Image (cartoon, rainbow, N blue to C red; front, side, top):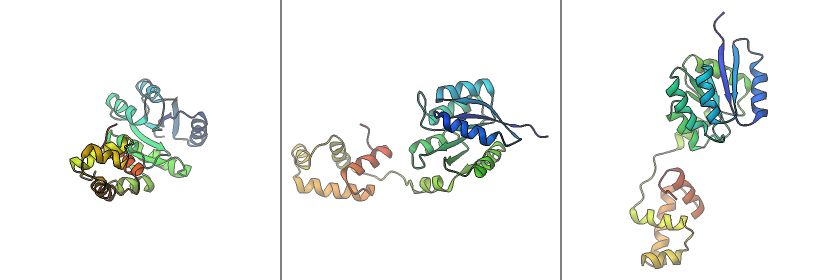
Length: 207
């Protein structure tokens, strides 16, 4: 019989860990070797237990899954990190994949597909759920904004009104609104709040 796939579950919700352990207990080729409640524990336990596959939640306390992933792989390049997340659109998913995670699934993936994915990544394959893949494909390169547009966007993020921005830049309210229309068009935003959120996500702004 082939060696069992040694699995570490990293998730800050006990009920999630218990549910996964119940599923994996039915698989004769699976062995759960440890549970981590946060990213720091995941890094430490991976060094101690040397799992084949780390089932990694992203949004955890102390250290996120995306931050823990490169540390785990630096210590053990043969480890396979499979992200399991509810945040299919999160920048954290891309960060984890860029750091070396070999797959990403959403948490409502049917358990049969999850089990198959673990076996696949244990063999070195890359598995990404269609929902996550679609979101990654839709994340185009950051649009180019002029220095003036970035300046206006920063003022928006600070909560300034059109008149306040106009007074600071001495370009008149109509000029500010013209820039805003261009900014919204380039970012695909329909409001100031959405424009700022998109700009932050694409690292156009730092506040």
